[in-house]
Image (cartoon, rainbow, N blue to C red; front, top):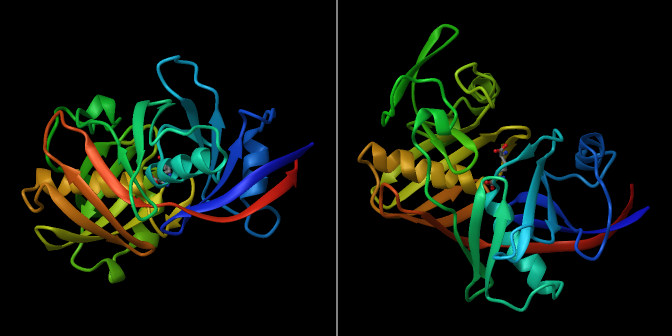
Length: 276
Ligand SMILES: N[C@H](CCC[C@H](N)C(=O)O)C(=O)O
C-alpha cells in the first residue's frame, strides 16, 4: 500500500511523520528499520506517528519509533515537528495542542517566528523511574565502564538519559563512550548519552549519542536532561540556551516537581509517498 509521509527535522534531528488519522496502516519494527535506512529507505532518525487519541481529554496520540525499530516514550524535537505537522495538515486549528505519549501527556504551543514551545513534563530523578540501578537518588553517580570510572547524572524525560560533563564537546569521546554507555547494564532499558560543556550559567553546548540511533545533530529530551543535570550540579541557571550541532534550543526549568519548557524550530523538508 502507498503511504503519505512528510520529511521534517528539528535542528537536523530528522523524521518521517505519518498521519494515521486519515490513513490506516500497521507498520512493523522491521519496516521502520528499512524505511529509516539512508540508502535503501527514506532515511530518518525517528518515525513519528500521528494517531487519534485514546484519552478524550487530549487531541492526538503521538508515537515515536527509533531508527532501530524500537518504540520509545518521548522525542522532544519530534514534538515540535508534530505540532507543525498537525496544523499544516489541518488536523487541528488549535494553537495549544495536547498529545498523549507512552510516558504521559505533553502540551505543544505554536508561538511566533515559526517556533514551537513544548511543556516536556516534570523530569524523573528517582533511579527506579529512569530506570537506572542505584540505591538512592543523587545529583551524580559513579559508574565503572570497563577500565574507566565515570561520573554522570541520570535523568528521565519519559526516556532515559545519562549526562556527562566534558571540557569541550568537539573533542568529547561521543562515538567511543556513547554506544558502551547506551548498553550499560545499570540502564536496563538502555539510555541516551549526553556530553555537556558548560560555557557559563546561561549557555551550554551538547552532543548526544541517542539510544536506538547513534549520534544525532540534536536531541530535544537530551537537551532537557542536560539542563536538569547542570542545575542539579549547581552549574546552570533556570533559563539557558543549549547549543547542539544542529542549532540552538531555549530551555527553562524552575526545579524539582516543575516541568522543563523547551522552545525551538520545526522544519518541513518535503512531502513523499512510500510503498510499504
Ligand atoms: N532516541 C531517543 C528518542 C528520540 C529522542 C530525541 N530525538 C529527542 O529529540 O528527544 C530514545 O530512544 O529515548
